[in-house]
Length: 504
Image (cartoon, rainbow, N blue to C red; front, side, top):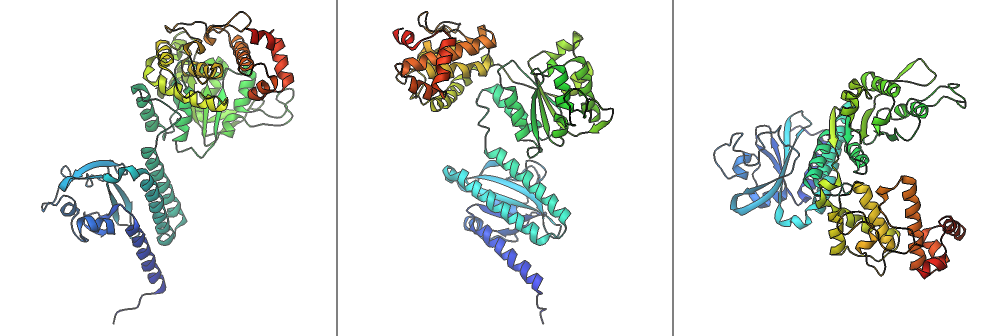
């Protein structure tokens, strides 16, 4: 007589049936294949396409061949289970049947080695993204249920959960793009790929490039795609503070270390323990700070100001500079050992003049951003404006391009931007945007100091808003987001009057 199943065994069978029923609901063709490449299970979609082939060799079903395939002839590369698993690929099978496929190795509850093969008919490619997201959630839930049911060890459950999250992140990376780093030029594509390749490591990274190229954006993407994305991420500009403040901010201080130190305080490195810290303008730090930073990179230790005791920290360091640190080393202004510690991996953010094919995409993105912010009806960039943008060498890089487009949107009239609104010459050289002596002169901000550029830009914005609203100061103040009192104070500061501006 057949022995009756126990309640736990019945529960396992019930859940197994539920899981397979869930597999059968999915539109993709799913195969669970054993280590000897015998098909253990097919869902309804796979059976509909290939027939019910449980117990058959996968090569017989997929390729229709009666001869077992070897590693090189496997139609989907499944026999090479250590290569490209989890990556989506495309293949033509029999009868002009094109599929996208992915194979994912995993361990069964009996510790046997299995892998999941997924085939997708790409004639439904228009719905691919929605279906893939739906499937990703479903398969994640299935695997979580298996973990909860078949694993009793908390340690093993945590390990499998970590692997699942890693797989999910890899899937998301393969099916999505980073909208922040705009551009399709070869340098940007190569930089993106390099970021994806090194992000998961804990290696120190040095980002180099001219001012305004977007080095901080590179650091952000490295953090986003790293294994520390759920840990602290702190940013610090080393050139923005004095040496004394830099030391206390980065390494912390003890109570009584200096006047005003009424209580001990952690530094940035302690706060970022386990996570990532981004040090911008690293070339600006003093020799003494270089020594202190070297201690962190070599020994993983910091010493607070006013203390003789070291504190252990584990922090990934991403540094950035627009200086030639190799030249600084030769000149004796930067420690050679620190340079090599920082420059484990070097990522160069290229200047905008070396990827001009990205200018139109970037400019259009900034146009959309600022027309919404300033409630303008500018819808496109005319050819004359595009030609002017492409002819300019952009010494201030992407930051300068954003400032120019922001200014042009503000100065636009009747929903139209002209080359004169850009503040750069028609031949790509600096030039004037037009106007009389009473209106602030439109010159490139890169030809002036930062303070002068800010004053000039503010005056131009106010002048343009006054003209746009025909001197109605309530509307001008509302658009600029300031009070009327502040607006009149600014006009007085720049020696401007509404009457004078409207007359011009």
